[in-house]
Structures are given as structure tokens and as C-alpha cells.
Length: 301
Image 1 (tube, rainbow, N blue to C red):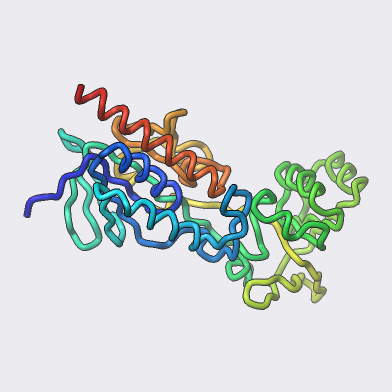
Image 2 (tube, rainbow, N blue to C red):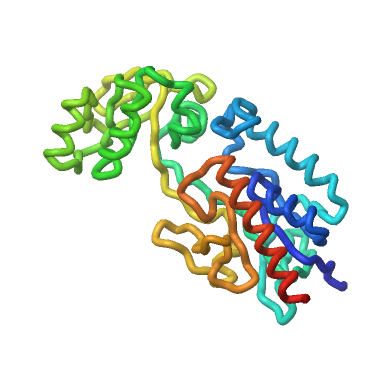
């Protein structure tokens, strides 16, 4: 069976992928977007800090974006996962989970990352709702509330320092022996930040809304919200299949034009940046789509 051919194949159809698809659709490119419909923020009730869309649900924003991109008749959507990718003489070959084959001159990866949750009962249910990662995305909604931070060491110090901008009722949970320096501990304490080394056994919540922490030894600690930084891995195996270089943090290494270390492959969105926000994903997707189109023009001129 002959493979369907496209100018560009985009893996991932959330904010970054849709933004790249719009730039390419408006550039008259034949584009295929493969998306499984499982963005990492699907549990988050509201999205903030994105002009014109502040307070809408992530699903609302992506639904509007999808409808707008669908207006460009050169853009095709396929529901599902891309399971395999390889470089060819003419570009790239992608295999879907249904074993369909697609060929593209260029490839844009907007596949995102997968968060790895700590083994604390209740954590994953609260993630993105009341256990949060970003004060710019969620801090205003829990301003001046009783707030926790799950972190330790230098990161715990810097994160605590930042969150004092949003609340003065703040406790740093090191979840075991503190690795802060004496100077860091004294500075935080002088600013009213409580430091607690007792391990967290579980999180009590109602539909993801945090009520209190169960601490080792039987104590409970009421909280309205808790910030945490979790580890992550790339959501897709495609970057490793193609041999793309990753940064020390595990992100796809790209230059200022969203070009990866493999010519013809671009990457954008959460898989490429620590600053995970809708506005950032949209901006990076636009850049990837525009630069990809310019490369196609240059090659065909």
C-alpha cells in the first residue's frame, strides 16, 4: 500500500502542534497532524496567563484552536498515536498505531512530556488542580492562602523565595531530612517560611481539591494548595528513535528556530522548554511552523 505524502507531518495536536499547523496551513502546505487527544494538562480545571483566553478550560482553548485550524483545507487530522519514525532519502516516514504509513518532507514534534508522580497517595488526583507547578499559571487563584511547597535543597529555597510573592502563609515540606544550607534555612525562617522535614504519607482531597496532608507519625497539616516540581520523560519514543539529542533536563534540544539536532526535524511545546504554559507553547509552535515553511521554500527555489 502506497504511503500518503505530505509536506509536513506534525506529531501532537495540542497548543504547540495546532499553532504550527496554522502557520503551515496559511502557508499553503499539505500538513498531517497526528494526535491522540491526551494533553498533559487535561486534568487542569482552568488555564490562566494567556491573553484573550484567561480562565477558560484547557479543553475549551484547544477546541477553538482545532476548529480554526480545520478551516485550512490543506491540513488533515488523524486521531491516534505515531508509533514509529525513520529518516528517508526524501524526508521522514511515520507509522501510526494502525500500521498506516505516512511520508513527510519535514517533521514537527509537539508530543509533550509525561509527568512522573511521586508515590504519595492522592498526589496524582490533585495534580494540576490543587497540587500545582507554576505560580504564573495558578498562583493568583490561591493568593494569600495556606500553601505548601514540596521540594528540598537549592530548588526548595529558590521556589519558596518565589512563592512568598503570592502568599506569606507558606510551609516548605522537604519530605525527609532537609538539604538546605544553614544560611538558606535561616533566610527562609526570617521571611516567615516554615520548614517541615516530616515525611508526607498521603494527601486528603475532595475531587482533587486539597484538604490536608497526612504526615508520618499521625499529624495532619491543612493546606489550600501545594506547589511541586515532578520529574518527567518524553511522552513519545519518536525522539529517541530518530536519535535526537536531549538536554541535561531531558528536553529535546532545539535552537532559537526550534530546529532539533536532526536536519528536517523541528520540536516545540513542553517537550522543549521548562517554561510550561499555553502561551509559550503557542509561540514556539508558530516559530516551528514558520521556519519549517521557510526551509521548504529555500529548498524548492
